[in-house]
Length: 133
Image 1 (tube, rainbow, N blue to C red):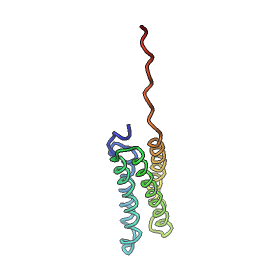
Image 2 (tube, rainbow, N blue to C red; image 1 turned 120 degrees about the horizontal axis):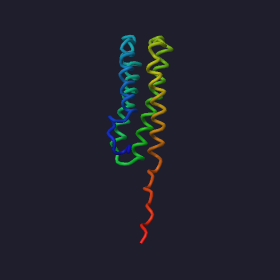
Image 3 (cartoon, rainbow, N blue to C red; image 1 turned 180 degrees about the horizontal axis):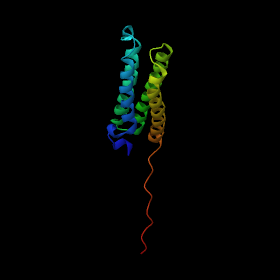
Image 4 (cartoon, helix red, strand yellow; image 1 turned 90 degrees about the vertical axis):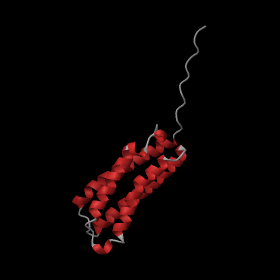
């Protein structure tokens, strides 16, 4: 069950961590004058994704967890926007952006599915028919 698993076991959290590493590697080559601008914003947005997945997983209700998954989705969109901006500015060649863009797409699908699952009430156990007398 989702609410009982550790966040580190969630594939979406693992992939989000991979995305953060990819973002740090790619942004290390950005111009030095972007260190406190685009580089910092991109890194912060990317790091927020697995952080919110982890925080949501630690919450006591499925609805609270789903709320943090929504926040992670917002950070994912922000990360994508910054990657696209870096590409437009010529800081990130398309070949170097491909791994991050692929992870962004996969993580987005996984976050949507996870949120939907969290917001669906858990199934009640199937009752067994009474034993014959």
